[in-house]
Length: 299
Image (cartoon, rainbow, N blue to C red; front, side, top):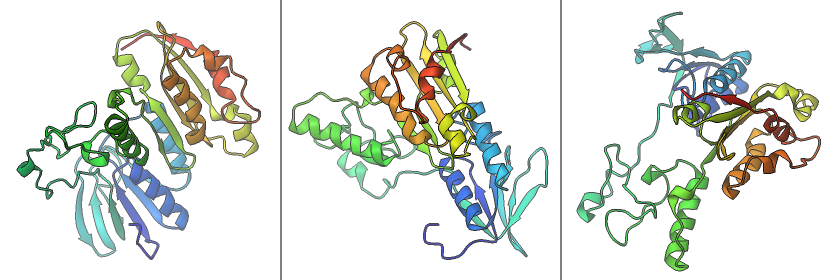
């Protein structure tokens, strides 16, 4: 896809998750007609519903067609290129396009490494099984990066290296379980994410405090005329520790790091609430949001 030297007339993206959405918006801005076909009832189902719906609206406002609940996805030749079966409850039973991008997930390229000859165990999906220090089932062999299934990002792969190097060379005791995962979805505006979603936090059964604000209340977003999106934060009501957050909006991939730092420092959310952020920035609304937390019940 990165080597494509033309703009498709109509690109159909099968898969409404992170990579699929990024390419969909990219090619729409290149000038292609774009349709996203997703099997699940909503886009990026790992995220909370309000975040998912806001991203859907952002993409649709750019002229991207979104077809969800596509329970019978299939491909067939068509006089105009190809037909992608959708079988949604509403709309046409198929989407007709000139090109298709399959963005339905990845699998590790471990099947041709001869791991079984070395006795290195893999799971049912082909990921190399590792423990909390990233050691495999064979002494003296460690697995870093995408192949271990513990993160699919450049920054997590590099952190894998840091853990193994520190333990081997510095006699440290660094553990994979100490890592607080942050990541971003690079649509425009971007989504910055860290920790638990609201859905997962509610399912944990713990008492929660939740804060939420639209990006239209962020002065920096208003000044840039980029007010689409929202920010939300989830806090454990008993420990006062931040469990997770999402910032969907201009600068969200940078502003999320202030929350990530507080989580890594393992201090109460009030430390960030009482901070004095710079004006005008996206981050300046985070203390305000924390000052308006509301109690919610678990699922």
